[in-house]
Image 1 (cartoon, rainbow, N blue to C red):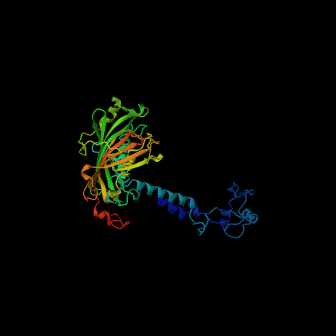
Image 2: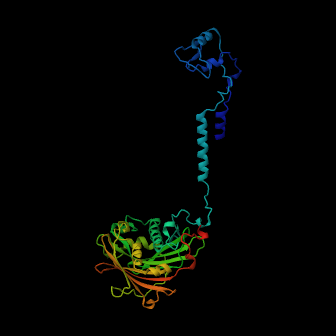
Image 3: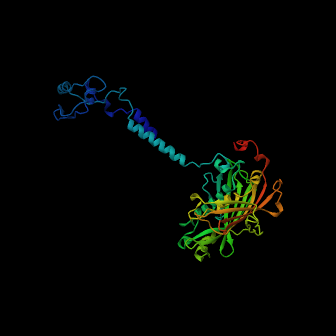
Length: 418
């Protein structure tokens, strides 16, 4: 149909009255666009002389008076205009309509195609939106490691991994249809001014991804005691399936107005329990007690740490990912250069606001005192506190020597990432 319309616009179909006798003035009468003619009963031709003819039609001017006088003296039988080059030019409006129709049809056919990615590492969640898998109990999302998410050793930072964990947790709630007005809160939680706060988190890093890698993050929730919820994460290489990071956390509810911990209401429990997955923690819990350290037991102290406006989340307290950066502020620089963080355990005691001033304390574990030059693993104890002494976070970190292939000329890009 489109092709027919296009063809007819280029090649006009001759008029069926072509058998009638043509007058030698046929072309003139056809050109008098402003003159209206009609046949009279006596056979004479009546002309409406009130019309105006165009002064020039692809040639010399048309003499209206002479043409009218001539037409009065001769019988003229209407006939189609001869096929000239000008007459055979296409009707541009029809041509544009045909082209538009063809483009719309092509677009429709393209949208109906079953799009498939060409890269194997994009077969799952190619656009990073995330989706529910495993009977609706596990949320999965892919992330590409960006150039601004890597550190001096060309691998993703621990803060980058933590941001991926937090993002998938929130997207899990949103995709499941449980997101209310709050930051990760369900509708029943929003009615009661309740929010989730993390009390404990444990992370094990087997290998840090590098620039250009695509990581696949799975997350799910389970019950933790009577008034808690456990959230686990499993981070793998999207291309090879290699396990990169495992993390487990415990969350409780807090009243957003009073800033006090609260029990889980039955209405909220009814919202979240259908999404609980019965499983063991993805990380074996480190049950060792986190010791309290002070000015006398700390080996390194970093003072006058203050939150910035961008460090706050929508609940108006410091994002828990920021705490890790502050804790590592007091870690020994030689260890940061020669080792990488292999494991971290955090216990959150208090929230931190915008106007807080903090101190970060680090103590070398007893077994590692005097052995910081040892190429083996090293362990530290950490404390993040207010200047007046109240504790915010206690922590423990374990470090292992960096891989040899992470060293070299700065700016060198591994071949597999280029």
